[in-house]
Image 1 (cartoon, rainbow, N blue to C red):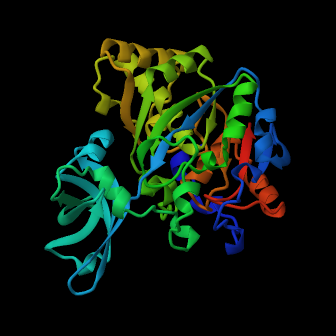
Image 2: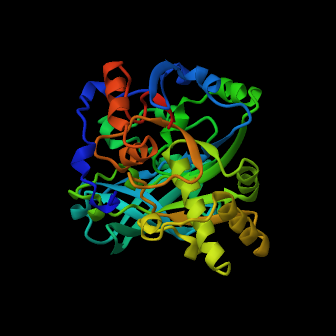
Length: 404
């Protein structure tokens, strides 16, 4: 199959507005679970997920945490300007960014941009008993986003403190409602730790401490990695063929221990969510690069959109991961930090992910392409079953376990 020439119209389906879950269920693990097991379809309740998983398997979760990425400013004219944080610019490291004091810069989307051509915007508020004035100034444009410089007048206050005080959690645009106080809890996974995402890894929203305990009781190992989900996850495919779609770059972090456990499990994993899939499969291609040139820098390990298709790899997945581990050893690193732009679509050959827990995705989306590639094109039967069976769709909707 020539993946580049896939027609996105072939991945459309009718999704009535009333099937989009606007709010989660009161109990996360009471959501429905669709099971696709070697072509057989059935359903259950999510809390029973562990009973469908093989004892001794490895399950991989994305522990990213959604940040309060929306900040509003009011101009003297009364115009409301929204600054939506996409990814850090200076400092570029997420951890350093959130600890920054006095100033920092982000790549941002700007709402009502035409009303903010120049000049500085300011907002005064209270943080930890201190009055703080936050000022923002526009920089240049780059790739559809704007550079925005932030500065504030209290060195005791970090940028993380500022976001906690005035930022708003960015719930998905298709929910067609404003962020509510409840979203601050329900739009985070119970295991979220590392701040940086502007959208939740939604397959993880179904997990509770009860389900995680049942997974461990069954002898299934759990590992975590980090992929910071960007706003590009909602970016529609506007080109007729997917060749014309540019995938967004997302930043990943995988610790040595996780790579060691993957190797111990024969480079086979159950992925929780498409973000975990993208990270694990990208890890394979990073290993392929290192097998050819062990002296690459972390930035050179970036996986480009069409890399898996332009240069089909024959390296065994375990050998690829061993190359990554050797790289960490030679550079005395505890974790691999890099980025990926990988697009997974029909024609892609999965290397590491053997089972997938995921929600139901938007029509004509790259996430639906990823699912189709995983179930060998059988996505429409799965989605028809979900639509006929009253399943709830998208971020706050129900879930599926896919075993191809």
